[in-house]
Image (cartoon, rainbow, N blue to C red; front, side, top):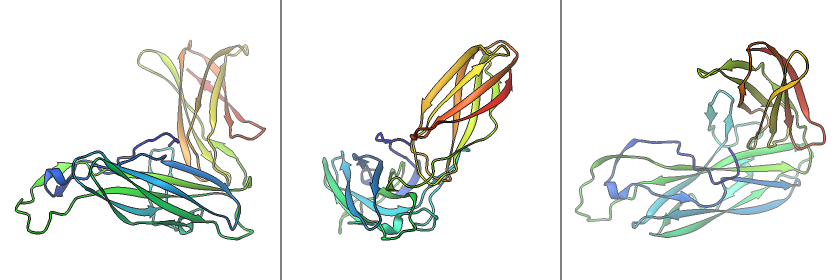
Length: 268
């Protein structure tokens, strides 16, 4: 989940009762993660750019969902506005269905109206989905529909609203798992939860010390936007470590002045 243009194919290899040439082939060219720091009562807007690289017109359906994910790899796309921190009711896409001409692109504007409320704090978010749809045969067309198997592409655009600089940024780590690969290389896995009120992109790193306090291994990685109440799984490759007992110090930089850290005793 980062701000690069990452295409989410959430449905694949489904049977469509449509000619093979009519299968939806669309792409979203704009960012799939949009963030805005706003104040209560503010209104702002954005644009989703939908492209059709094919030779036939393509239909795209546009709709909203909420979004949650967890370290175990599960993701939930609930009805819009049902999550506690959903901003879906604030968002108005300017279209729910578009037709993109061949070798062209269509801009889909959306507007966001942040409620004027003193109770808003931290980060609120949801998704706008852009899903390709089969093209209906023209009236009187002689071509007979045929069953074909293909991929229906669904693009998910995360829209996050941060209320001023408000909201706590806190971290919860779950007990890490130390292991060795078949090649004898040490690894460390840990789950991290954003237990606060504000979303952030954590910088995570680990330092591993032996019984004499000597640094023996370290690893670092920056992760994508982690929303309140969501979690991620972090894997570190630590290289060759002799069998023994070590201290692992795991750090998380959430963008504030202070850095979160926790220490574990691990064995290889």
